[in-house]
Length: 129
Image (cartoon, rainbow, N blue to C red; front, side, top):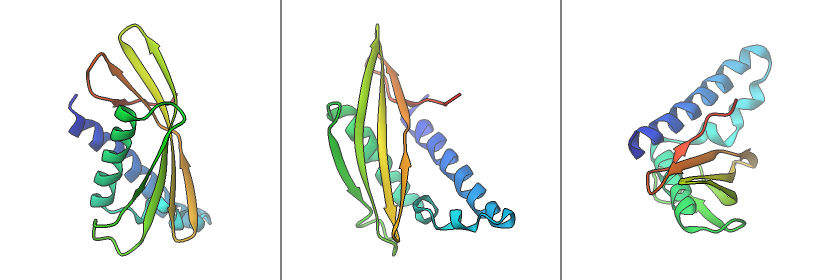
């Protein structure tokens, strides 16, 4: 699976969350409409994914990098802190847990994705069971 496909899978997951947030208003959970992920536009998503993959490739456990959506054309300021939390190796397979704190309009959201790769392959977002 290509990196582009992985990015699209992540976008799909974000879209599902956004769809759930929009549908949640009917269940009296309208507060989900103001979560930072609801303000992300496609260019923001592409940019933050690049930053996450950069952290996976270049940061040591415990190291962080900052991201913001300057230059994406979104009128809503969004920023994030991306921290590589831990790395586990099993033969040629490497898995890394990442913490992403996403901020927009006074709201904060914590995401904890895990990515794995085989050898020098591309990072794959892992599904949680």
